Amino acid sequence: MPPAVGGGPARSELRPRRGRCGPQTARVVGPDETAKPAARSRKRPGWGSRHFEAAGRWALLALVTLLSFATRFHRLDEPPHVCSVLSLVPCWSPLPTSLYWSCPTPSQQHCSLLPFSPLVTVGKHLTARILCLIVLPLTLYTATYAVHFMVLNKSGPGDGFFSSAFQARLSGNNLHNASIPEHLAYGSVITVKNLRMAIGYLHSHRHLYPEGIGARQQQVTTYLHKDYNNLWIIKKHNTNADPLDPSLPVEFVRHGDIIRLEHKETSRNLHSHYHEAPLTRKHYQVTGYGINGTGDSNDFWRIEVVNRKFGNRIKVLRSRIRLIHLVTGCVLGSSGKVLPKWGWEQLEVTCTPYLKETLNSIWNVEDHINPKLPNISLDVLQPSFPEVLLESHMVMIRGNNGLKPKDNEFTSKPWHWPVNYQGLRFSGINDTDFRVYLLGNPVVWWLNLLSIALYLLLGSIIAVAVQRGAHLPAEVEGLSQVLLRGGGQLLLGWILHYFPFFLMGRILYFHHYFPAMLFSSMLTGILWDTLLRLWAWSLASSSLARGLYVVGNLSLLLGTAYSFYLFHPLAYGMVGPLAQDPRSPMAGLRWLESWDF
Image (cartoon, rainbow, N blue to C red):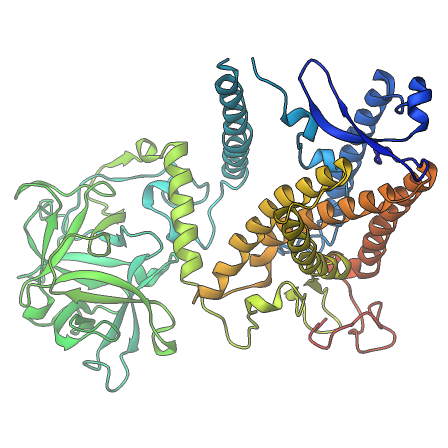
């Protein structure tokens, strides 16, 4: 509702107002009011008008919600491949101030208080905020992931980022509803997975280490995806007899055994020596060595199960094992560092002389093929929902921290984001492609930037005025408190979500600004709502004030909506000439040279 405004004679006097709460702040009273008590103040809106106003607010909120859903789901099936992009829908609405912040009026601040009742009130407020600001968001967030795990339950190329137990719940994964031999035996074909998240499988391929990088022998790495080059054959260290020979009895691998791991695709043994690792100083290089399984004593490893006694069998998936190099005494592990292009940007494997147990040097056997052994079901390995939720977040954190730009890929800088300097191409490059381009709504982005600057200026003026004891009318004081307190919290939210990116060394993209942008959009809504109310309050005519408030809000909303209409082909996709071509649907809308759509 616009503020109650009205004119009166130039002369006025200040009169204190009394009530059951005691003396309250003085208000402005005209001389005619002493003669006409009935005209002293405007009639307070009745229950019906207040109810109508509340219903209008809920209707407006419902309309904005429906528009948000409609704009985001429109043409969601185009293009026919995965392409995440956010709509350019208006991200803020200058709703009435009361929806943003509830600030006590001066008269409410001086009421005398029902003893011990402040503690009860604080407890109620604290409980309400814990429930609404912590419990409810966490519940919704967790519920979103519950739906996510139910819908996205199929195997894909990224399975290797997750633990063996996580993969056992993915339909189509070789561990899903699988049955494999329980105990490791000589002659088994296995994959060995590092227990640290997002490290992957022990891997080798026919490519050699380049000149100047240790010994020029076959590369050994870790790889995050399922691959035939992840397969190894476990053999005894002192014989080349085929353990799968039906005439020979099954011999299980036990804790403390000396073994060889022969790479199935290249027949080279897992090998280490005193040459330095490619990236990690003071660690030893790990290679593939030998011909058809024949190498030397540097191919021998002692297999140990963490916290087990010598002689115990080794269980697939469950046993946490370490491989100790027999000659150097070092431990097989992965540093997690990404190798250069000569290593296909896979992760470095080293043999560390530091024997401290870390997840980087602990492995488990995942795949296990041995026709001489009976199989058991893996259903018991499927993790609970809290375990899945925790692991997925750990993998996301590690994956994000390890991101590096691809060749010719544009990465943005934090100062680009508030000015909408450049968007992000999500799909398509040429004029024959279906192109999707992520760009902020220019009206919203630039109005937010202007509003932050205007808020800092206006907030500073008001703060200085209040500090110097300047007397403000009650209506102006209330709006000023809304602007300073509510706007200040939103400005702080914007700062905390934006400025830390200047300190980050990882790869950054435009969408990293979106959480901060939401705070700046809410700040824009509060600022312009307050400015329009103050402008309306300064007018003498109530009908003019109401009209100005409505026209101002509609102008902001329509300007945002029209900007969305102009640029909507970017979000929903476009085919045809690029923006430089006059025939393009985006011709004339490339307002900045840096917009490369």
